Length: 68
Image 1 (cartoon, rainbow, N blue to C red):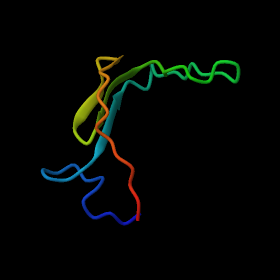
Image 2: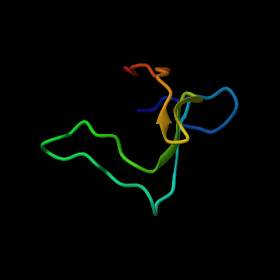
Image 3: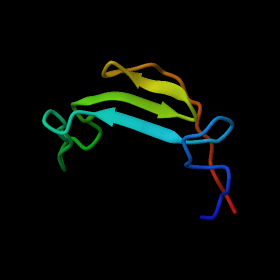
């Protein structure tokens, strides 16, 4: 999308980071129950703010819609 300040892991930039163990990650969603969280997501940071920490949701909502 050509946003020069997004997606680079550098001070002052905006990036999202996911930390997981590929041996334990697993999708639990099904067609009958599609809103199930995946297992094995250890940390998810959006704009540097943890939204999943040690596998648990933090209720933080730091993201925003990007438009061109």
